[in-house]
Image (tube, rainbow, N blue to C red; front, side):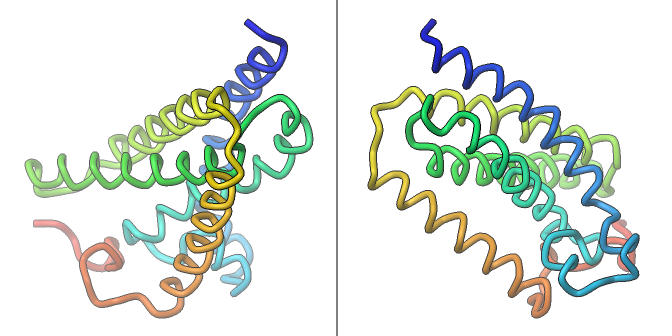
Length: 176
């Protein structure tokens, strides 16, 4: 294993624990800050499934600020890997949530938490694998665009959520 691969492996493992921890911290950050609008862009403002997807996005971005400074010379396709990783977390959480609630007709917090942890694990695994690909400026630009678009979409829908199930506050509407 090359020095760069070993470094990215270590940071992928560190990232798993950091992103899980940051996600847990971000969960209640909006309420801890007396519902500060700026924090509402990064932390869930209600108990909708959509708002909880922010946890993965912002935990990955927050960790990536430090990680990038340390491993940027040791890996390829950094921004593409992170964008792909964020999408992996989101799709994992959505797939698990909508699959089990379709059968159980209710949500179970332990399964919700587990889906986030699984998503972060898969995110970090995907990032580590993408770091090994041949470097591509195009992929990195795509990654930057996806990350920027994700930030903008989450910000927009925090203030203007559509009237659909994905955006509905689950505390207000119990599952039958």
